[in-house]
Length: 238
Image (cartoon, rainbow, N blue to C red):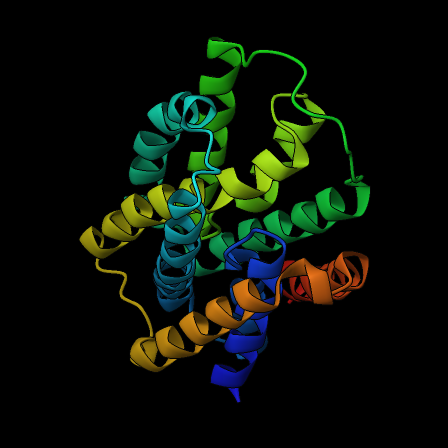
């Protein structure tokens, strides 16, 4: 059951340029997985899904690396440092629940924009944004893409199309260093990670093939927001 849901999550998220870290955490919350497994498992699945999406986008030369580099410059060290922090079970679930609720709020408020990137990315601001997203990614196990895309669009640092292509490599980089940090602290993924990985990769491939041409982005967003809200409330108030 969990494998099928992971495949469905991966399909939906890759269709909108994300890896699915927030939804993976939501699913694990419903299955009452321990915090010692939740973070490492979510980060591991993020790596698989984001690696495939990054390969596809980079092969088609749609990743704006000039925008991404300063973000990664600060986000990767922050994610690694956060990955080395081990939170108590109750604290981790409260923090992760709040992040899921914030992610749902971001998705609710996000608006589609057709305009192209209109201004240069300020180096200092870009580094600051990257550090914050990297910290959240490493601490909780989310990839950061669900916050990155709307932030770039809201600040007019990237067009919606550019933001979608920038999210997978950002998620891949931060999830990888966060995963390494989690392993160093003795937090290991679920024993079923191999099976979950196959499901996530299958979903990512299908989501990329189907793409937004056949899916309604607003409908997908509605379902994802509902899942995030339910899981966030469950974690915060459990």
